[in-house]
Amino acid sequence: MPIRHVVVWTLHDSADIPRFQALLEDCRQLVPGILEFDVGVRRDGFEANADVVLVSTFADAGALAAYQQHPQHQAVGRAVAGMRKERRVIDYPVDAVAG
Image (cartoon, rainbow, N blue to C red; front, side, top):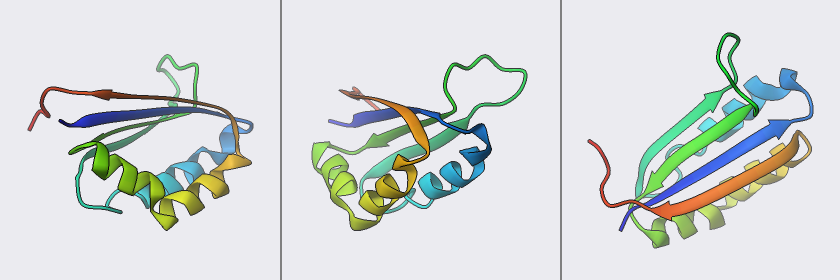
């Protein structure tokens, strides 16, 4: 069953948004089983109470685990840790992936 993985960050300094986004984008194709991977950032004129969001979908729990354990993903986590003020996560099963 596909797993949706959503992470929302608030940063200490909004000037870090482009670098933060680029680091996340480098994880787009780390492992087989990434079905969807979308990084969104705060934009003027749109409502937001956070700075960056990652909405991704994995083929199954094994693909999500492989992603989370991948050395590059872990390195990105360390790189962004100092930029983030807050991080919120939710993972949940989805019945199907729109395609």
